[in-house]
Length: 28
Image 1: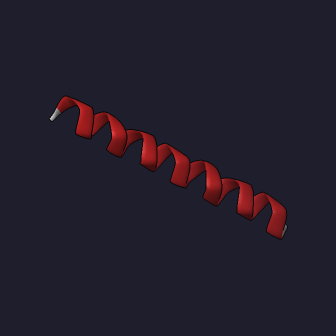
Image 2: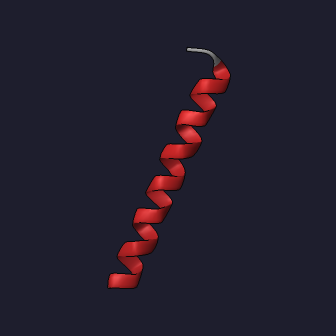
């Protein structure tokens, strides 16, 4: 796995986590 693919994986994961947190805040 090259660095670019690793960066894409990390950024997509972090954006997914942020979306989940946002949804949890809206529901709370």
